[in-house]
Length: 460
Ligand code: F0G
Image (cartoon, rainbow, N blue to C red; front, side, top):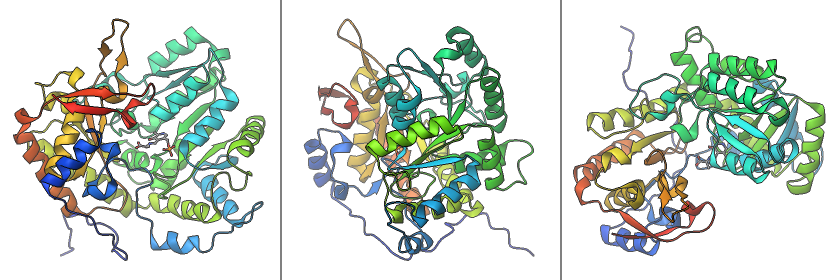
């Protein structure tokens, strides 16, 4: 008679609530026009459900809030630092733990220390800030994702995997002297939040180490990745996410981390690594830009929140709910015939706007137009990952479009409930049913770099 529920519930109850604001269609139309049809420029108060990012937008637990009162704000030797160091070491086994204010600061310090002009850094797919920090050093950021990872409708259990043959070819072509390190991003955010298999990390590590090249993990969503390994990779079903994460990090020589994701905190990050000489140089740079090595860019209470959050991110009930809530939305959209990247990833659903809006050419930014339509219809904020973000100017004055026109619906951790997701699916069905009415956009302002944050548009 054992009750075996089909419904996977939110594994928490709500102790503190924050109202969200409904607006009229008229109000949203005015707000969108004032924002130049760029959702980054909206006031967050004009948004009902905010899926712009899963970064720093999660809800902390009562244990984390309680822990924050225990934060030790000592400038040097803070007890909270040693708690964070212990939590990171337990999961990663890495020797030196260097706290930073967020992930990109860890990237800047790492690449600022080990990377120079003419170098090449391979990765499955660099996240934008990672790429920018590599390129800022005059080096090349080279993406070596498996071919399956670039086909939205194709099922593959580990679409974030690195292409080993292309990595081998890069090692042979470039040579060890010009590859300071290799990176692997778990999960692969820019490619749809897709996981990397343990076998792939193991093989990449062996290949790199046979050439004397260290492997670093961009660990932002390491816990979600561990959950996918547990679900999909043979031999891992009976292991805890912690044990899986420990094995994954055992193949690496270091990691960068944004604790705004699987650190379950609103701010923070760290760099962790084994090499003593590199760590010393990184700490010197840390002092220059972030702070003393026992707090980096963080308050003592932030380090407490992260130390506790890292453990919570690995809890099975949490991960089951987390990944299921993304999959649940994906199932509804697939049933409604809305094209998405399949299978769904760990932190977001990615809509294939190019396939949904074939009447809008890439030069008229179909994914940006879809973001606007979704906001107008339902007050939902998503983010464009297409030609606004990745389009590149051509010598003839035109523009080279991105390879895919995607809209990312990224879920803050522990924030929205199943009824929010049901509402979202309804809203997307409504918008998709009226797809012909959606018009393209004309870009009227763009900044020279990272234009997607501030670009302005007019409807065509
Ligand atoms: N690496 C990955 C894979 C990321 O997704 C991010 C941030 C970073 C590094 C940088 O971390 O923001 O703490 O400096 N991703 C956020 C997003 C911004 O919306 O996907 P950060």
